[in-house]
Image (cartoon, rainbow, N blue to C red; front, side, top):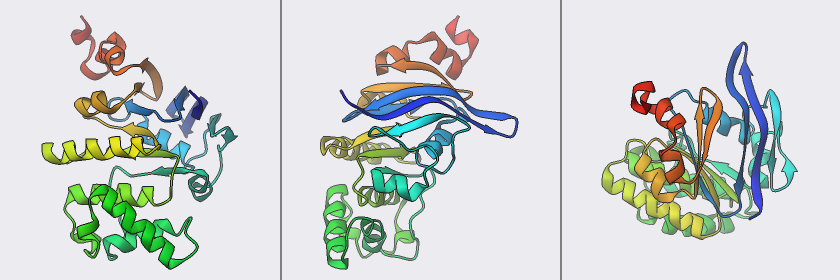
Length: 241
């Protein structure tokens, strides 16, 4: 398999605080890779480094064979990396369709083309019937789908999903799992931060585990779930004993 995303010795320091320490791993084209770890492990900081919000203090990030460390977020997005946020951030006063069109303009030269792209994506994620709804009036589950729709409108090769399942009920979680599997079947590679272990285990080809900014495990979902280091990070020394 061809590496699409490569992190090589990535560290990020805020003053004297190390948020990431020498993190290295790859995400291969076509994979779904889960990124897990306790709160404060550095997962969202890592996303911020990948998509250009932060420049790494040390190390390099490569996407599709090109070094992207230090590039601005809009340039990284244009190369084919899109992301969602843990706290959803729609353009609240705009309708659902206008939210998605705003992202579609990244690659669509005309309003008509952006509209057609947005309508296609809303059908895909199951929000077409809500296209004229002002986004701030959507329930949380649909706002999460809108966040993904906006990212998809940029036509990414790699999609970074930051806790897309947080706050969803079991029915909404099941729908979101199917949506993510559909996106992956369309050829989009996915790196996903998630706390719901059932979700991660059901959709991930591989899992990377962070703790205190360091990578402590990497492997199949089954390998990671049985790792003493991972059990210790989540449940403490007594659980391992």
